[in-house]
Length: 155
Length: 400
Image (tube, rainbow over all chains, first blue to last red; front, side):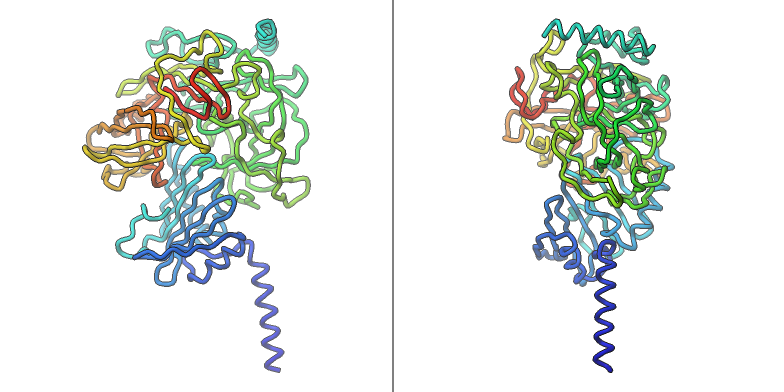
């Protein structure tokens, strides 16, 4: 009986994983183990680069390089560079809605112009820029950045 | 060739007369002190920065021009005004809502990613006439947020195929009817989808069906473009008029002289050594982008305050700052020193001046130095197309 229950749970869990995969790869603010979900979803190559204040989990795909900055077993920042940005709905997870709301508010109040953008939400900061062919950006949770880490380190 | 060119000029004039359009553009008259008489010819498109005369192209440092687009193979044509002149991208893009001509059917969708925004829409092949040049048949992007149900009419995510926070939604929101990308490369580098049935699926599209820099397709003036804008004093100007000249050294009006040629890499980038303070030099990636409203640059040693409130994407120094930088080709030579000023833009912007030469903001991308429109004022900038040869060499290169 117990065995059967475990089997059922495994099936349910697999289904959740399969159904969820396109939307929730792993994400800003989630445990380091979630990086592997990203790598698999993106079919990318993973390289782990240790640094004094964090560990960089760098995922390389044909379209971009995505760097996830892990501190205290949590993804505290992400940076990207490439032909296109990664899917930010997936990458920012629960922070995407905040990003969208703040972005809409900023767009309504800022003078129109073309160039780099910086969206400072209540919890998350998202900066985007670059140019066609070399699109760049970063997103981070200021409250989770370890002491000594500056946003310039995130790229 | 000469005969063909004259025929095309006459054809252009005839079309213009038929449509009652004014090809000389609605910019300020040539009596304005900021707009000396520019070059003329079939290969010249007027550039204007003049919000007072344009309903759409209305933000500071926004250089705009117009082109004629036609239903393929017909004389059913339309002049589309208020197109952003963009040396930072390749290809023509026009909002669906700004087009009145019938378009051939298409199931090809495209996400086009810019540093400061994203365009989603369908790709159609149309006839395009640049100035008085011969008509070229070229795929363009027809910007339409609602195509295939991807975004709302306000550009907010629905199915969100591009995976971004928003897309350009309308001429009034974007500040242009479209973008004329005359950058270094033939193809636009966008991401294509097949939307014959939903959901759209990622597609590999033949080069001939991708959005392309229309200038590359011209029979003669196809090796590059020149952006020539008058100088703008530190107090700004209410409007300026300049020229987008097609071809380099192909006509009497586009012969280069005394310029420094900076070879670029496969991304269109050069090396910029920036001097944030005396004796300090940083190594940055440089680009020249007429579509960027200001000069975007950063350095961790800089402590220029950002402007408060809605202008927090701009620098607001307490007094004007003068900086220098040296641009070099990707291989390290040649080099060219440039000095520029950054001032508090608030008074300049509120004065109603639309051309501002000393406005800057942080490049949120580490190591990127974006020479935006202020760089172009008072210069003649040559955009040497990749793989094309002129008196200045073989592209990709920037020269000024």
